Length: 66
Image (cartoon, rainbow, N blue to C red):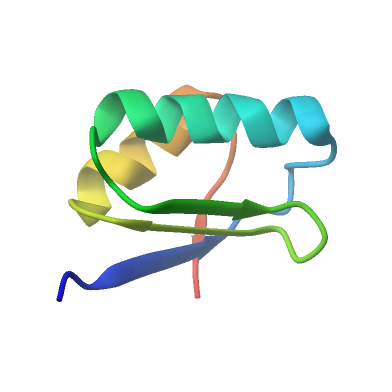
C-alpha cells in the first residue's frame, strides 16, 4: 500500500482552485490517487511527496503539512 500525503491548502477558495490543484497533481504524479476537498481545504495524494508539494506551489498555492 502506498502512503498518502495530506496537505492543508488554505488559499484554495473556489471550484476553479480545486481544478487547478488537481490538474497540477495529475500532471506531476501520473496514476496517483488524488483527493481535493474545498470544504476542509485538504489535498491528499499518493506518490512522491516532494513532487506533489512542488506541483501545488507551482500552481500558485501554499501547501502546509498536516
